[in-house]
Length: 253
Image (cartoon, rainbow, N blue to C red; front, side, top):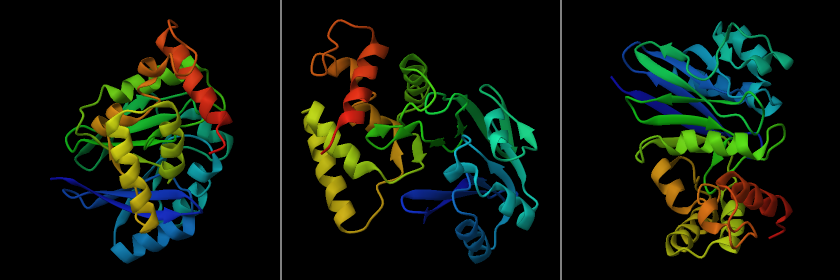
């Protein structure tokens, strides 16, 4: 039976995600940006929370662990770095898997934003929860990792099937689109940016996205094709990515 995903806003620009395995009726919370909002959604839906799946240690992703565990008894699963702010019931790393009822999540190493960042991928339902590694038209800042690590992480995600639905953790797409247009003039990007700006004007979310859409329009995944534009012609792919990331860090549009 399929996985049902419920998405809702948290904090100023985060999204909360609850995923329910329909075979067992058990649910997982992917990250805990805002405990109150998550608990209210669980109560409204009538879902039984079994797991908290953390992608990384930042407070807007793991800060609600203690309150949600206290209220639901859910087990906390995540990378070792989460213990900087919250205890774990199970430590996982890339190559492991986590079961939610009959749903199998593959754990994908996706460090760069933080060193131990992880993503969770349900191959049967073609769903990936990627935290702050990959965004719609963007990627996470490199707070702890180096460009080669982040580029390798993005390539692992890009290798997933194009139809994979990608749940990223923030509504950054409009600002990401403005930057993307400054370094890439691909027609597909221009068309997508128009759709993004219109959706945000209507107050609509631009998450989730898909792997195929990101490969076609995301400047961070397209970095080798943009190398000359960002002053990295002839350099290795991860250095072209680093140049795009640096340009975004300095972008004021």
